[in-house]
Length: 76
Image (cartoon, rainbow, N blue to C red; front, side, top):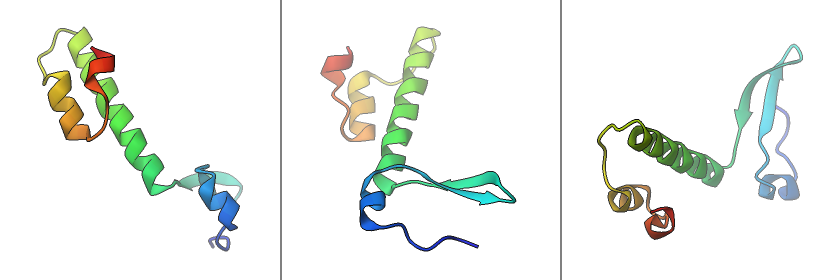
């Protein structure tokens, strides 16, 4: 059973809402913008790990275009 919708100020806080079953967390709801940000950060982390390990990959400029917003100049 899901709790009723959070008040407006809670929805704007970008804090995850945890859903539990028998007192144990089983899922979390997060804001769509927060999900997109986390996906971008994960892609960047994977890219940087590949580069550090000497594996090929795309340039930071290509990654920037793919992620749609990370400033590649500040990361170079």
